[in-house]
Image (tube, rainbow, N blue to C red; front, top):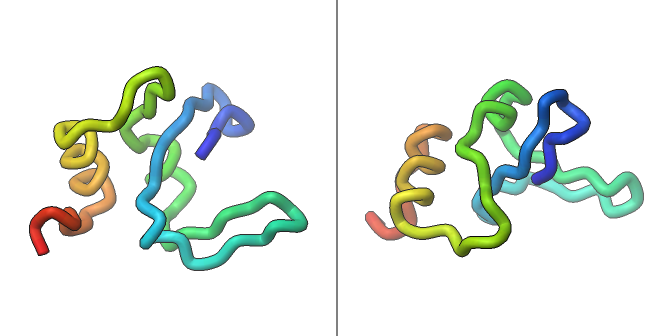
Length: 70
C-alpha cells in the first residue's frame, strides 16, 4: 500500500488474507485496520524482498498470528 497521500507517506505491506474487499473502480483496498495503524506500519522497501524479520514485525504490529506458526 502506498500511504504517500497521508503525509509523510511511505509504502507498507499487508497480508493478502487481511483484505476484506477491493473496489477496482476507485482503486481502493479495504482491510480491518485503522488508518493510523496502517500509517505506522513497518515501512516496506520495494528494492528488497521481505524477510522473516520484516514479517514478524509486520504481523506483531497488526497483532496477528504469523502464517508460519499455524
